[in-house]
Length: 348
Image 1 (spheres, rainbow, N blue to C red):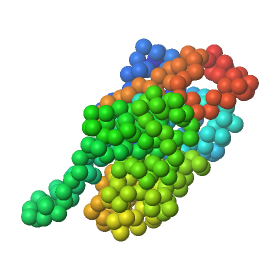
Image 2: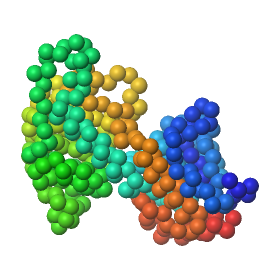
Image 3: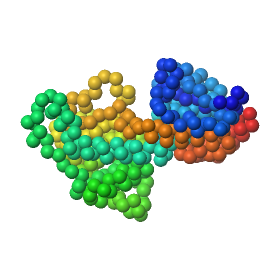
């Protein structure tokens, strides 16, 4: 790092272990190499919500899990950007950031392959009863195996709620399994675009009724909060599976628990929950037809490397007067007060 950098980037403390070393093999920090005007440093402590005092004089903050609130950006004279390490930003008060003249950007595209692979892996694990069969061997119940006949993906129907990058990547990976034409529900996608992807665009009700695998790949916002409740689960086939790698608040957990425990649907795989982190045994853990992960099923070395490179490049771009990719509040660039701040920081 330069001895006199002018663009300072801070990373939330959850990227690092107690000894200060990174908890992950590659965060893409090498992207800053060759840019001596940029420096980076970690927050001194982890908090569930970022405090304004933690940001200090940083121009950019790269965020893993903490929430960004009104208070976080309440002293943002020098803060230019919040970069989310991922694609979800429901824990970021975007309106407050815009009002404080702070750009919010995500790493759109960097997560697509890894989440798609995890989704396909879970589809196979669910349909072949991988968790249950593993337990039969561990508990010496070999002769119980005939009770758990699996089903292939062949001739089944995949339905994605959300046809963004992850949904499209998943559809692409599934092409070699001999499945039927995939279905998608996404109010923001036209039938023409869906057709180009090889997907049939349908209503949510039709997708739930006709899919053997219902996979959620949409962001959590007011329009999707509680999108899948008791009425929606009742539309699913009894032998269908629900997969959620998006956000917990999209699914009514009580309704899902009821549907799973009564075998109203065949099973589910859940990577996210309404309340996180889950630090006590979760009720879903009592069910044998559920696969669970601590919001990390798609975490791979490649994923963190690609996300890291993307978010670090976004900071470099801003430091050079360029707009980063993945901006979620583009209107901030139309604010004269933001333009003045950006220009001032570039000249500092």
